[in-house]
Length: 338
Image 1 (cartoon, rainbow, N blue to C red):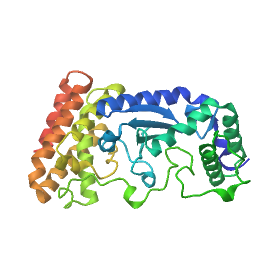
Image 2: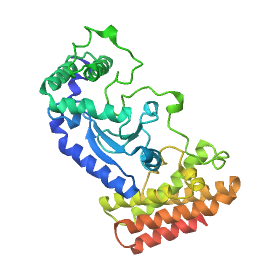
Image 3: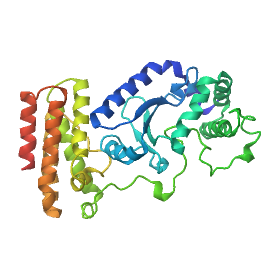
Image 4: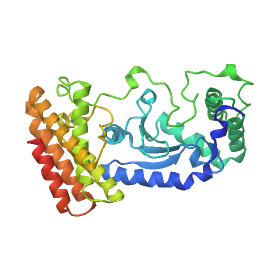
């Protein structure tokens, strides 16, 4: 066998790690105030399935809460597979050692059904699971691997009893690539969106017009790193996790024109070097952010400063009472913002 075949592993070997990932993200969603039902999906959710070794999570939210949930998630999680976004699907990357994705859908939508029905059939029907594993083992390379999965999930979706009529290659000409079920329901394989379906620009009208992408990255990086500076003032991985999400929640709750300043800019800058060097760069970025606002939008300076300081205070209070080290860090942030 060639290509991806040698990279396949049994889902049973990933189950504990997948459950741990779900628990961590569920904790983060609570801290962010994001509602919904978080479930494990994809091959890792099917006992006995072969998988490439990634983990897929699915957040199901009420239709009227979808936009607000996505907006909050964008402030914390990097956008994943932007080409896959649609009106009823948002995809994010979850920073972990093993590739992990988070799909968000409104309950009852096309994408919501797509992310649940196929995997439910594999979990309940050993015959379909066997076919699924066989087609993965029979693939001859990455492209063939993805096409076989696409055909399989299209077939079980279309068939009245959920049973594919045959393996890929026997009826390849019958595929209609424009149909939304023609790809396997995973974080990275979803219906091609129209241009209007791409991730929406969340900047407030007028507020973001004067700023370049680099400007937004500076504003976003400074805000995120400030709360990270406070989180690092006291050791403890779990505390830092709760603190970072508490800080993001504060940013999400800011007035729209202020939150918009950090709603773009991609993943924040990650300074390298010693703790002292990271701190120095963080404080320098805060100074750059304020100078930028004074030059382009002086009416937003006070709001930005208040948002950053509140996120730092929330970060300090998230795990326990604010410590002396955290108070010192907050004071340094406040000085840099002056």
